[in-house]
Each structure stands twice: as C-alpha cells, then as structure tokens.
Length: 351
Image 1 (tube, rainbow, N blue to C red):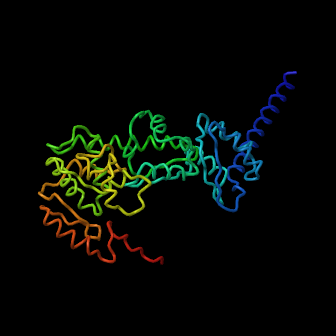
Image 2: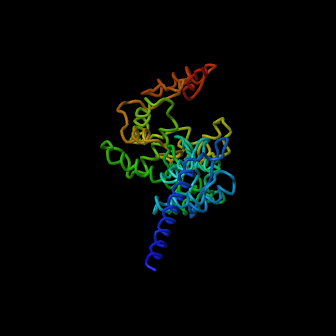
Image 3: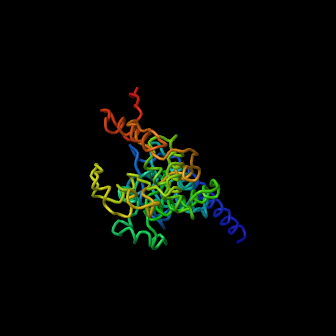
C-alpha cells in the first residue's frame, strides 16, 4: 500500500513537473513568436481593459497566437502592473515579449498640439476641435461656459492660456489640455511678476498680461519687445492714448476683413485705443514668456511713436514731427514687398 502511494506521489510530481515544463515552453514560444502583422498598426486599449481581454481580442483578430500563455506570463511575472489605456504602436517583427514590454512600460502613442503666440481664443478653440484623438467635450459650449467648466466662471478667456506644445494620448479630453495651458500661463505669469522691474504702472499681474498681449501683437522681431513695451508705458504715464491697431482690430472681431480704415478708428468699441485711454479691458491674444518679460522689464528711452518699416522692424520716434516724417517715408510710399512681420526663412531643398 505504501509503495502504491509512493508510486502515485512520484507520478503526480512527475506530471506536475512535466506540466510546468510544458507551460514554460509554451510561454517561451508565445513570447518569442513575432506578431502576424505586415505593416505598422495601432491598437487601442480602452480605460479599464485587462491584459487578458486585449490579448484575446488580438488572438481573435489573428494578430497573435498563444494568448493563454501570454496571459499566464503576465499574471505570474508582471503581477500588479496596471495596463495603461491609450494607443500602442505595433510594428512588423514585434514579438509577444515586446508587446508585453510595451504594456509594462506604458509606452502609449503620444500626439502633440502646438498653441501659437498671438493666437486668439477663437483660434485656440479651432485648434482643439481639429484634434480627432482628443475627446471633444467643449465644442458645443460658448466661451463663458468653457470658462465655467474650468472653474474660471466670469473670467474673460482671452490671453488666459499659455502658447506651447502640449502632448496628449488618445482619449484625453480637450478640457484637460486646456486646463494644462491655463495652469502653465498662471505659473509663468506668477514667476515673471515676482521678478518685475520697479515702478511699473500695473496694479496687478492681469494688467501686465494685457500689456504683454499688445507687445505680442505689435512685435515683428524679438529684439523690439522691450522697446515697444517701454514706449507704451511712457504713453500710459503721460496720459496719452496708446493708439495700437491690433487692439482696434480685436475689438472689430470677425467684421475685420484685413483692411483697417479711418471709420474703424472712430468706432467706439471697448478695445479702441484711439478713443479710450489706458489699457484695453482684456488681453487681445495669447502671449509667450518673452512678451510677458518685456511688459515687466520695459526698455528705457524717450520714444513715444513708432511706425513699421515694412520688413518687420519699426522706426521709433521721440516727437510727432519725427514720426510724421517716418510715416511719409515708410507708410505713404510703401515698398512693393511691404510686410508688417519679417519674411519667413527660406527653406532648404530636400536632399
């Protein structure tokens, strides 16, 4: 009887050993076998998906064999690892082990959206809508409702978001990216405000943000930012009208068709700086750190007027007579290649 039990025990241990060896062998085969794909493809792992569920799906689609063995490998070798949702890029030659490593590292496909200095909030919203892989939750809302969703109820949206390149993954919401841009703007503005020059005519950071937006829209070359900020600040201190065209254009909204007329300069919108003294009521565009820095570190000088040369730079004048001469030279006799911003750099030919 004892011998029989011993034989059974030994047989059971042998069977168990064979089963473990078979399982290990099958796992290695599944791990080393390339996925059945001939070209790059993306797979989406939705939130809450399990490795087993995705592996079964891929096996049903004919992408891999041995889902059972890969599931067992994940369970016993990668226990506790969360499966990040998003898109994963599969390329020819990728093995089962490579796939599990992608999941273990959470290497989801990332996309990017660049918000550009000088954009209006309308342009920012259009850029968000154009991102097909962003979950659209704001498209049907007006601007006030968008700000309410962000917890910024009652705040004007213009200039409240920082121009930068933001990365996101499939399934991320548009409001999440917008919140990042707002938080980044707040951070940069706070940093720059804490290092501002003394004696500036701003009661609060928001006024500096408004000034930065004027500098952003008026500047054609980076080297002139501080000079333009200094000119505007001198005008404020003297009680002069700012007379900045970009603010007038912003106040016209979609009615502006590309040609600013004398009638526009007489139109009493809140943003008409030819009629209303001081800063406009809100920023008129998104601003980068450089424009904020210029608004808080204006260049010293005595110029009160400036006019575009037509190559992106400006002529700065101290007196109205000097200014009028510059206007006659550069505005009334415009060169054929006149432009208010610098020409785009010449692109090299592909080799």
